[in-house]
Image (cartoon, rainbow, N blue to C red; front, side, top):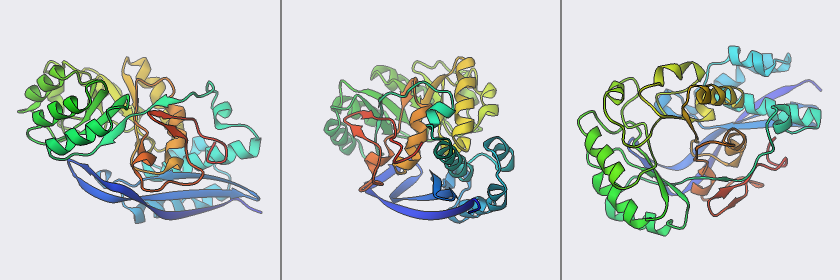
Length: 327
């Protein structure tokens, strides 16, 4: 049987709502790519993101455009040139990795020349809300080692103080999702230092973040929306201390591994993050996250239901994927 490709849309309900500075959603809509070769099938999942101009329909179309190349046996290396970075390439790239593992009888870890993966401490995300509600949610999750707090309003000082009161022992990442401005940057940074915040993600809008090179940064600052691929890294030095590598931005595991190595060579700390998706989307990211300074792969924990079988989570730990899921 010839190699074939299919793309499908799936919807996973979120437990409650997921709210950031740009809006709120109650469903995680994902696109899966499946590449079959006779009885073997490899698959990957992506989450189209409107912030980057992606839609479900466009991503499905971009994947389906690859059908002739996939059926002709395109390599992962050639795929990097055939598709632009983003969600669509992520799903195809990860499906090709999974299929190659099944064809060879090896694991993706072995194929990529990686060390055996270990369980990782992942952040758990608390959505943007009023300070009292965020305090309550932080207190409910104060047993977790690492919390990621969504902020990004004109006055987040009360939110920063509230979550620290609620979770006095947890390490805390703040994610402003481009919601702060040059005018309120200094006061927010001061509140971060006062409350022992471990990292601040993307405080200023991508493309308008020059002020980060000119202001004292009392806590490490991580690029998210400002960085997508390896070629973006050099321009971040001096403005950012860390980069958030997400497979839906890099366009798959292949580029994510390359980007991690290049970021480390530039002296940037590594965070590996995710969109809100199922365990299938997290599985390859767990491999990239080995040895990372910060891990944020809690997507399945935010869902009302996950794929079965899914990743194994225990408290703040996420375990490497089993072959029955991916890789």
